[in-house]
Image (cartoon, rainbow, N blue to C red; front, side):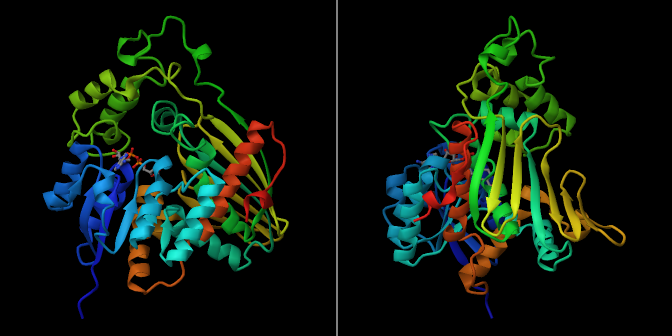
Length: 426
Ligand SMILES: NC(=O)c1ccc[n+]([C@@H]2O[C@H](COP(=O)([O-])OP(=O)(O)OC[C@H]3O[C@@H](n4cnc5c(N)ncnc54)[C@H](O)[C@@H]3O)[C@@H](O)[C@H]2O)c1
């Protein structure tokens, strides 16, 4: 029997819509066909149009004509944060099922409005909390559910953002300022908050949070530093020098043809040193990190209490060398740890030997959010063909993590004041 081919349109062909989901779906020719695409950036539109084999007449560079009618079974919305709800509403009105990049929105009204509309239109809205689909998060959940550490008492999670990633996304890049993006605790950590509430097995009751923009501000600019890295006397010594991050680091990893974060600052592919130099000479990624229009935090800690009594802390930290999440679960009969950087899960029962699983033994795909970017696509196929019924990251499940992020931001702004989650729920 022939397999069903799910037809797909994509709006927003950047790091996510183009490079992550689009590229992967274009390889799964027995499952997906990308029929229509939209991006205001003509270079990207044509680049991915060619890669995904989308006919020229099905490439749109304006949102209005793209949303004139429904083109496919499914629509991926992978534009910037503040466009998601506007586009999702248009898509639901047209009758699309949607895959929606996180974050959905940082407005409670919009979160509720979109959830209501999805129900009214009886459409699927799958939110890209991709970490839920990784093999290692599933393993942790399985061990917790099996009672391997007894009753779960508390969770301690760290999202190691990494110094250069902070500079790239949250100082120079798209998520630097809350005028154009959601607060960093939502942008970077609605994944973490989503995982924590899932692990806790209960809704969050209350939140307290502290954090600040500690370092990336004008008063920390070294004496005599220029406004752009290439004309700065510290270009070869500053830890955050664009030349060191985008050119030296690219060379140190072997000068790959197409790899992040290098492919996010230029559309030239395959990448070249000249293209990277050009991008930092003229573009936003060549700006001094102490002289940008950034206002989001570079460190934040959130303390949470859940309705079932479990407590949790989440630390979002820019100032680290190596990325990945560290999670520790404390139970009445043992401990469970994930260290993504080391690539291990360790179960420490109070009596008996420790058990260690290497992530590479659990899966051979740890690419893109630990394999989550690929696995969500397989899962979406299952949902669209009816093989999978329940939506793990449905809009109903996903708004909870957004409420937690909103509560954390409100608390942080108010000096750590306790914020109850009930106020966000209808
Ligand atoms: N799930 C995850 O783990 C994850 C990871 C990173 C980013 N994200 C989220 O994914 C979204 C996209 O991020 P990205 O890194 O791909 O950003 P990006 O800036 O690389 O891509 C966004 C694209 O949208 C296009 N665009 C802007 N306005 C448009 C319009 N009106 N119509 C059509 N296209 C338009 C831009 O030209 C750009 O190509 C963001 O909301 C981000 O927060 C999610």
